[in-house]
Length: 455
Image (cartoon, rainbow, N blue to C red; front, side):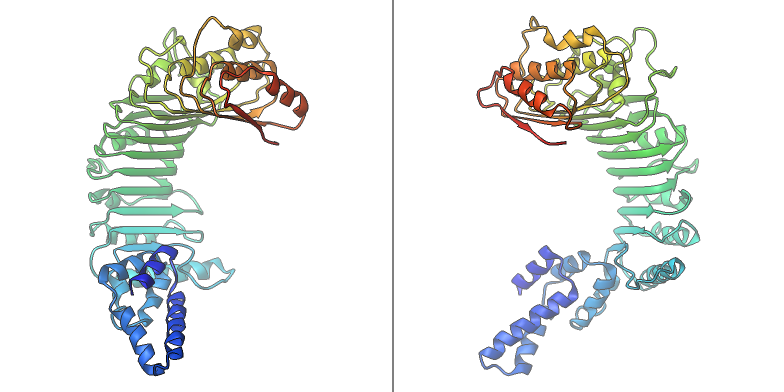
């Protein structure tokens, strides 16, 4: 009995898999000369007598359509689905394969209405993600229903149409621990005081006012994980979150300010557009780099993508950060090797990460005059610096120009425990010359392996 349950849980078998297993065991029993009726009764009895928590686990791993189908197994399963605390409505819950989008949408609405009408008990998780669903009164009605339950996880993904304006009743869900929104317009009411229990927030393709955004983040005191992608309505990422540990963002913005984020360990930031000429960048001698790291004493994993290194390079770039990032073990940087400022900023980060173990560098090509300073920056040997813990290096988009080769040579010369360096060029042009250059560079580590990957 337990073996059957584990198989269903681990492999997420649908109801017919369970029936097929039952038929197989009945056949085996028949080979032992047991009466067929007795064999079937024994197997059905095993299914009926599965512990309640195992039945709940099995049903939670199925789509709502398959969970309802499981009611045919036995009387104990018949109405189990109406008490499921986890409801997921996605592309699997509509069985018809019609090209009529209206028909599919109406079918989905009827299913959700029917499930919520018959449901008894608490709803802890509700997820709606279907390609044919549009924001409107139907979703308003479902959210109003959910706001009267102790909902803990709410996911709403609108894949078509305009941004869906969330009803004000959603902001009354104070039991929320996880909130995930896609293609939504957020406008919290003036009475909104925050989500006091929220630990995970995922916002993608959203519209929100600047003050509303800042108030939302600062009013979630337990927030630990925050994902923000493709946003509009605000341009300054002012993050005040004392318990935040994970932050991942990508979009167009002018500024990033962390405040009281001393637990933040994983940060990934991608600035999609070059806004370095904007008036909102660092003024005078101020440094975006220093400001950025002022509240990140425990950073362990940092990813700097697209144009964000160019943002960090604005203002005065020090040779080292005032406080080294002693916990930083993984660093990923997208850099324009033809830019002196970006090279200096990357060098500052490397010299401020004494315990770095993994380094990823993505060369960002730009049409820019190659300055002599950038070609000699990585050649200076009087720094006497060593990457004492660097083991893995990945270089992508390399074209083999001078600064890039100098950087590779620099890493190989100052990484005594390096184990593997992977190099993937932007194109196959000059591949053989690049390989010859890689082979002739001196290596501080006798175990260092250089792997060349075709573009």
